[in-house]
Image (cartoon, rainbow, N blue to C red):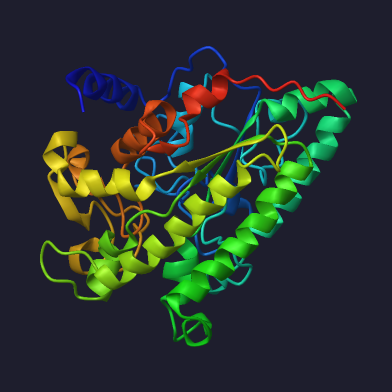
Amino acid sequence: MTNTLLLLLTTIIAVGEIECLSPQATALFVFGDSLVDNGNNNFINSVARSNYYPYGVDSERGATGRFSNGNTFVDYLGAWLGLPAPPAFADPATTGARILGGVNYASAAAGILDETGQHYGERYPLSQQVLNFETTLNQLREMMTGANLTDYLSNAVAVLVFGSNDYINNYLLPNIYPASFNYNPTQFAGLLLTHYYRQITALYSVGLRKFFIAGVGPLGCIPNQLVAWQAPTKRCVDYVNQMVGIFNQGLLSLVDSMNNGTNRGGMFLYGNSYGAMGEMLNNPARYGFSVVDRACCGLGQNQALMTCMPWSPPCADRNRYVFWDAFHPTQNVHAILAQRAYSGTPSDSHPMNVQQLGVIKFKITT
């Protein structure tokens, strides 16, 4: 990473509230899990919440429900696109003009499969998030004419971040979920991809045309899994990373198949989260990190057994840490991931990056 980029990222992170560039999309619609949840779970009966200190310790907004010490991937990506962070769908105030710049539907503990994360209580799985988008769409239909709405949707960007919970809060918990008894890793990845394809197609069918679909990061390297599997020092859990790799390879193939011309006027991008995170973990000093195997806050060995407890003090040198809590990265990592998604090489975002996607202006004719 160049010194210029490091300076830019440091500046963005330091100010807490991100300044947006000129808009390159009409709206940003976010679907996903706790990696991009910005407060939806605050409004439902869920144990998976982060609306308390020390979450948000480095943000002027404070604890909003983001599972980070500050901003998340979509906060930064939205800023690169020139769009403010979209409001949480479940917030009663998310209505009227507030939805015009997009909406965030992401929900902590949610997965591609409906049953994933159910031990945390209520959450919005992928299928429900798609239905929630259709609720937003009904409101938009009252605010725009048909032609204007079509143009608006076709030039909005949809970000999808799913899959992590289907492993760490489903397949890898055999005492709670039967999936690992019913499917081998290849079969389970196929099951996830089948469900994922169905819901992505549903979003395309109602008018969205620009998609960024993030792969799953190296879950075998997160503090929780290192402790759960008692991984050797400086080693990740290969078994977990191998099954994630099967899913990611299938997701990349799925994206390629969706770009083969059958989805008229659509463009689908695959975000290589695994590769980007792997580089930071393998070469931490290059990115300004020095702590890669334990969390900045939490409980237990290496703060890896649970997420941050209310009012527990986090580590003082947060900029050195890759992981904020047992499962989630720090905002510095989120900023780097967003930059690589926005302006990175084809190895970061395939077959193009989000900046290039923003340049494309779809004009849908009927």
